[in-house]
Length: 193
Image (cartoon, rainbow, N blue to C red):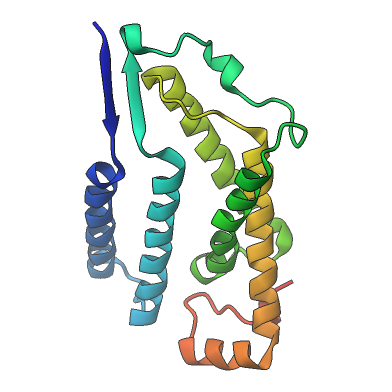
């Protein structure tokens, strides 16, 4: 049996967005922790950002099975040599894609308070993305490749986002805006390293 079709992002991410909203509302109802409206806005903004990341890194998902399947073995689609095979525009776009992660995570998770933890979070998410892309390639014949350069670029973007936030929180404008915002996890220049 041969199958060939494409899955667009709204088909998956639309219902996923509704599930995220329902999960936030359910969490508000049953949780003993009470969040402010600002905290929910932060969580919702982060969820929308993550849906955007998923849109760019996974979709469209091309399903190619049977005679339509890519005949190149999946392990040949992995870019094993970092930096030497880097495509500069893709590398820069991956950095830009992950800058918001490093900037937003300290507002969502209090343990993100240093370059090391921001890098760890960026590395973990990037690794998860690359493994998922590899599994989609193996199971559905999707044309996305697994690339070590993406992991390096994404981690770099996460660190840059954290550094930008750190510089921002130390500026007078940043301190005034953060005081107005009353961040969910107490992000301030005092707890940034």
